[in-house]
Length: 272
Ligand SMILES: [Zn+2]
Ligand SMILES: [Zn+2]
Ligand SMILES: [Zn+2]
Image 1 (spheres, protein in one colour):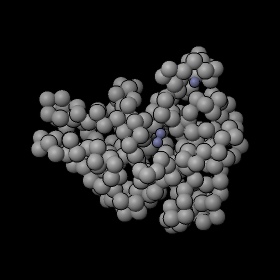
Image 2 (image 1 turned 135 degrees about the vertical axis):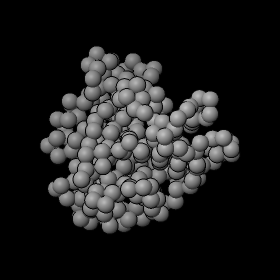
Image 3 (image 1 turned 60 degrees about the vertical axis):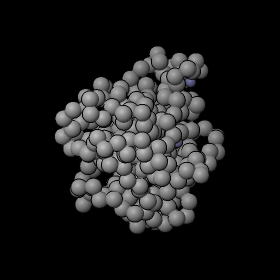
């Protein structure tokens, strides 16, 4: 699997849209890896997780061709992950030559409900299907298993485990520390790669529905105990808020001693 990390910011982006804080000022001055857009990943050419409001920017910056996209898996309806209005532009007249249409969209009940306007149109080149927690979805050569995130109830927010024949990847974004059911489910895997949100960095925040760096290490250690993570597992952190106060290199100097990789927009990862 080739995992292309398109965006690595929390909801407000970084520099945040209207923010004049010191961290955003420093990010504007530094540029490069300190400019973070809203979170999403593309896997190989056919698969994408989430449709953030920066999708058009991602197309321009990374030369993506979403006319070839075959599967879109949505985690939840927060606007930084699900800019549903962009899907209007897949309709006839706005888009032509979809090489893998219809685009198959999967999401929780709230996502499916918010896409009814599109799914009901007979000319819309999409299918919209409900993703049930822990029920695997086979999508050509990959399997996506939705897992229950700890995020923004009462919406049943999802994260995904992505499996090829030889590799297992966890996309843990957005979530707080997983509950018992999800932890028990994850114990059955042996992860090659985990991409985990770290919204609050190494701050002293104690978020329930997001993660800190300490939380990421705790998740790693709990999964290591269950043999789902070992020394070969790459652990990558993403979905950063400017409120964490660390620029990219500063976060790298905190994460690297723990063997954790700090994602940046455009980073590409390969698994077997
Ligand atoms: Zn988010
Ligand atoms: Zn700021
Ligand atoms: Zn969210």
